[in-house]
Length: 619
Image (cartoon, rainbow, N blue to C red):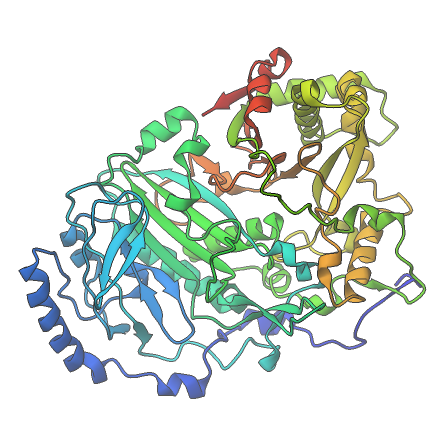
C-alpha cells in the first residue's frame, strides 16, 4: 500500500466468495415472514370480495378478472416492503389477462380492484375503491381496458433476516455514491422483434425467474436506496435498505395503441428518440421531479413493453448505486440468470464487494489541490421572472457506421505522431469529433476567446485495482479545455490525443490518485454537495460525454427465445444541454450517439458538411 494511502477501517467486515456463493436472500426477517397471512386464510375473503366487485363491474359494462391467485410476475408492479401493488397496464384484451393470471399456489391476492379508463391522452383514469388516479398513454378512445391492482403476499418464506454480512446497518455504498446529485435513474431499452407465436406468460416467467436468481446471489439488487441522518449542513448517508423479494417487473401492453409505432417502423426509422420516450416505456423518470415525493427509490426496476411486432425491455438502475459500467454488468448477470446459467465465483465476488475499502483514502497530510478544482460545485444562478425564456432543447440520435468510425480513427492517427506505445481509440476519435463539431455549430453565438470544456466520464476500476466486473459505481471525469477558435482549428488527432493523454496511468497524479483525492475530500465533509462530477461544467459553453460503447448489450437475449436485440437505446428524457452518450456498439460495429443541444445549434450541426460525411441523423 502506498505510504500516502490508508484504509478507513483496519479490519472491515468482508463478504467472502464462499458466502456470496450460497446467498439465500436477505430482506424479510423470519419474524416478519411469520406474520404474513397464509394463502388459504384469505381465500374466502377474496372470493366474497370478487363476487361484489364482479356485480359492480358488469353493471358498468367493464371487463373483470375472476382468478383468485395471481403471480406478481404475471402482472408486474411497484414493490413495497410489506406488499406489492401489481399492475397490468394498457391491455385491451381481458381474455389475455385471464390467461396470464393462471391459478398457481405461490402467491395470494388479498385486494382485487377493477377499473376502467377514460379517453384522456394525458393520463389513465383508474377507479380504485372510489379514488380516481391517472396514468399516461392509453390504448386509444373507446377501448375496454382492464387493469388489476392487488396486494400480493408470499406463501413461503423467501429470504433470511437481512442483507448477508451487513446486519441491521444496511448495504453500504462507497464514498463516491454519497454525492446527492447522483439521485437519478439510468435507463436503457432493448428492442426485440416478436412473432405471432410470442407468449407473454412465458416471457414473464423467464424474466421473473431471472430476477429471483439474480436476487438470490446479489440481494442488494432488490433493495432501495435510502438517505439517513441528513440535516442542515449535512447531506446524510446513502445506503441500500431492504425493499422486496425481487426487483419490480412492470408489464405494459401497447399493442392496442394505434399511435405507438410497430417494431418494424421503429427499426426502419433507426430507433429515434421520438419513438422511445421514458414517460411511455420506462418504469422511472431519469431525473427527479421537484413535485414528486416517491415513497421508495428502488435499486433496479424492469419494464416489459409489448408492442405490435416486438418487445421493448427497459431496465432502470439507480445511479446512486451504480454507474453505467456497473449497470451493464448487472444487466449481463440478469440475462445470464434468465438463461439459468450459473454465475462464476469472480462474478459473485465482484458483485458483493466490500465498499468500505474499495477506494483507499489518502492520509491526513493530504490537502485538496488543483486535482479537485473542477469538481468544486458552483452555485447556479437563481432564475429571475425578468429572464428571457430558455432556448428550446432537443434530443437526437446520430448513427456512425463501422466504416465511418474506422475513417475517423484513421484520420486522427494520421494527424499526429504518437509516442511509442501510445494509441488513439475509436472512442477518443469519436468523442473528439463530436466535441469539435458541437463547438463549430456554436461559433455564431460564441466569443471565440471564451473557454470551452469537455467533461468526459471515465471508468476508474482499473486504476484502483478493482475488478472490471464490479457492479457498483466507480467513475470519475476528465476535463479538457480550449478556446472555441483553437478547438475548431486543431486537427482531429490533436484533440483525440489530448483526451487519451488524460487516461495515462503513468501520470504522477493519474485518475486513480484524483479519484482517491475526491473520495478523501468527500469523507471529510458532512455536506457532500460541496463536490460533484459536474462541478464547474457550464452547459451553454461546455460538452459532457459518457461512453457505453464497450457494453455487450447486443449480445444479450435474456433467455426469451427472441434472438439478440435489434436496437439498444437510452429512452428520451428531460433535455439537458450539451449532454452526449455513446450507445453500445452493435454487432456490425455501429455506434449511435445521443446528443442534446439547443435547437439553433442542432440545426447548424445538421447542415455541417464535415459532420454529415460520417454521421447520419435519425429523428
